[in-house]
Length: 250
Length: 250
DNA sequence: CGAACGCTTGACACTCTTCAAGACATGTGG
DNA sequence: CCACATGTCTTGAAGAGTGTCAAGCGTTCG
Image (cartoon, rainbow over all chains, first blue to last red; front, top):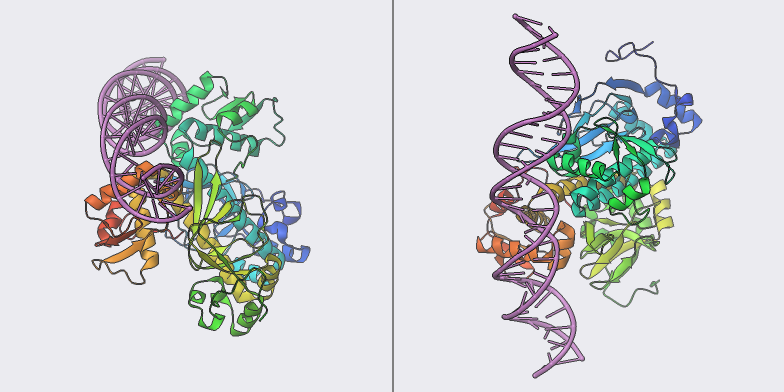
């Protein structure tokens, strides 16, 4: 039934009615009636790890909600240094209505499923649907706050604190109820180099600080990208954050 | 006529019909009819330099367009370091609808005139006026891009490049047509310490780099905060930006 | 005039980057 | 199965760029 030519015969993604992401995504602002229109317009897309979804300056063919996996927004500077300015995790919105030229490179770090729309279609829906539009504005405001919080982390923290911050952040997003004192596990899903590009360091410094944190027992390596966190509270203190203070979420 | 109690007897600010800011502000999205409603709802406010408009976590009594002067959005870190995460210059929108608790300290760097609205009133106008709402979303998207571009500058540039970037940015905003090769003037309006908080450096380093740029003739000091820029293109190169590449605007 | 403030300049310490080599894992072809 | 290549990660040593601490200058204001 009306398969987009790009859509291989994967298992179908959930219908809006059964979709878990809908709790937090843009579509959480949609009414039941709206949802039926969204269902008709949406186009699922899948990407492998390491694929480029859009280069900076190019037009995005689809915008929408990340269903699973992690995307990076990045820009390459003058002399080859690369800065990742945002991570898109499940529930986050990829692309912007009325601004279909992406100002950043959009790439997948892992396999990614996207619940997408043609930009013009989605803009039409936004104009029609009050709730959807309202949720969209909320999410944009949240993203702005997150970007600014992220700014303070990159700008003022030491290498050690930056890594601890990233680990705490991802631990919180990956564990539903990470009780303090209760050990938990975190998968950073990014290579040392990607972490470096995200935190504005060299991958050597990333490696050094990770082994340093491991030596002190704040994290316990399981594989190279998976760690056990025996004491999240201790890791928070290493991140230099005041108590529960403003933990970013992008 | 209907003077707000906060409004001392200053000269009146312009009517919307004569307002220059309206070219770039949110209200540029308003129709002639909308404009009459805006005119009725707006409340001009004035602040002296160094005033605190809102502390982080507090409710903003007014949101609206900055008419003149410069405001800073800032947050104080754990050990007393301060990070300015955004500058609000004339035409920029101060505060966010549906998010009246400010996540940052809002302060004036100079004397500031604000064309403000009660949050609830402005939200009502947004719901009613398609053009206004559309322009608001555009501005939010631009702000998000600006925050992310700013991120790459803070994260990856040297002290010298950061200062050059800031100077170029402000020069572009303060000169309508800064032709390359044509000399122009820039007023940074911020103290050395504020610049340091904005660029994540110490004020000593700011001072050193400014004198260094001046020694090389890239900027010519007029007063301590005003410089002539004999060759904007040369300054751009010192900023490490690729040609005209993504110059941020906050 | 003295005090307060913003700014400049210097000397030194320290963090992080840079350059370089090696360890470890994975995959390929003989 | 090995030799070899490749990519990712670790570790080391030296150097550059900023932060830190400290002193001094210039202006403003009471």
